[in-house]
View 1 (cartoon, rainbow, N blue to C red):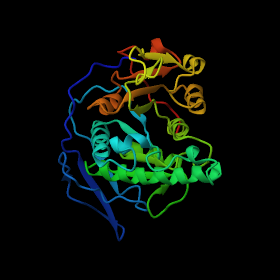
View 2: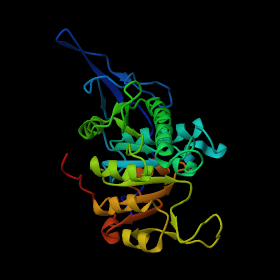
View 3: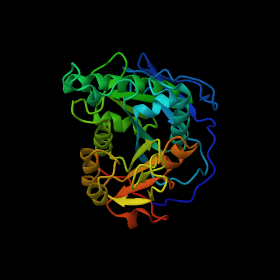
View 4: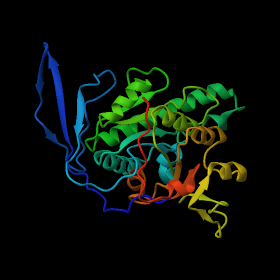
Length: 318
């Protein structure tokens, strides 16, 4: 699973944010503003604003080579909790957001699905006074809290961001509409999907696979706490082998814990590669978003995927 050669990390220097405001039938352009690196600056873009309000100009000139143009990043809720194991570790969220913003400013269209396990995991509460469906809905609400936190962190780097949820929460997020999500991505906005699929009995991994297929993402990047997919638990077995690449069939046959069966089947049927990598290594997220070689790749055709000089074409059909 090699992509084009690694390049130095592009600094988060100044994507210019310009806004068109419409008043009385006349359009006036606001002065271009420079969003400096690491300077908190929330973009005033929330649910209910017009799609035409904010657009982002990309920096000109050669940038780091990228294999993907539109990707889906899946981040588990447990990862957002950091070492505390519960709630939100804001340092972890800031680190993830910085690398997401870096890739977005470099021209990659980034969609994100966040889990909710740092607050509530529906499946774990089944039979404890809650039926499974009710517990899953509570878990969906937890993902929305994480999505809002991630939105604020990404916007602090000057990248406009939208949270879209599978059920209506108009005060805090837009309802998910496939074409609108794609339009946001085309305009350079990071789109964060909350509330999973909106249905109980489905994991957020399945939600990530479903949304990836719907928005024509070229890859699902699953950010985890380990370096990739192993033949055994690396925390228990010091001799565990890390796979560089696998086929969907091998994952299913060996029962490897890449994603749940529904999610991996969705990716297989829609020919969407899955890359499993360690989000705790600095630079890994931005590198994975650009298509550089990290972690383990799961795909239908390993040899085709591993051609370093091959550009993955943008999927057609919106």
